[in-house]
Image (cartoon, rainbow over all chains, first blue to last red; front, side):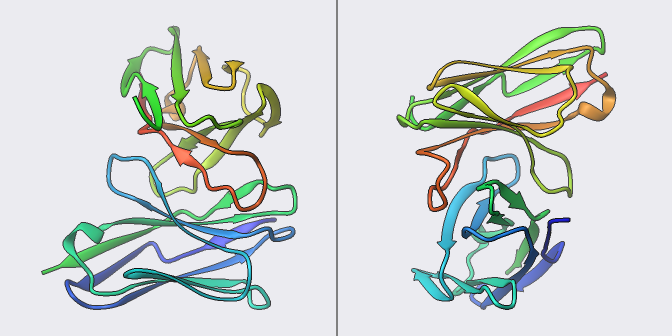
Length: 109
Length: 114
């Protein structure tokens, strides 16, 4: 079966750095997405990786290793507004998005 | 209105009621999706429409019935639901179904079945 694993919850301190991991087992691979979802709101797109390596976008970076079935989202200079759930999703060989259950990130002052 | 809108935002219905959820996208996208989001579970894809044609139905019970009259509007008709159908129902759209196109989500309808 297809599976996306990510930690259920993480806690970090304002101003620090946090890395949220995602491992996947899917039938085929056509890209990996990270989304942010604040409580009670819609998920919003953060990043897309299809080739191995690091994609940087301001305070957020996303890394992909296709051979290891692994990605991480790196958040730097954490702010209180970064408290949210972070969803990892992989597009499989049928171009369907397979979603992880999300990682709830709690930022403490 | 911009982006993806959904109405109503909250809905409480009995098991014998019939109701409809509405989604509208103002982005000129060609693909639209219905998802179910339950607490601490992955997003469950329910239906996909591409250029108004249904391309995916992920074994969704027949008490959920989608309708896509045009590429900007998507409905989810509900009847004789069960309490376990209580969840957040999210609509999304994308330029197409190709690999790099991200999905844009609406704010969701919080559904409670009593």
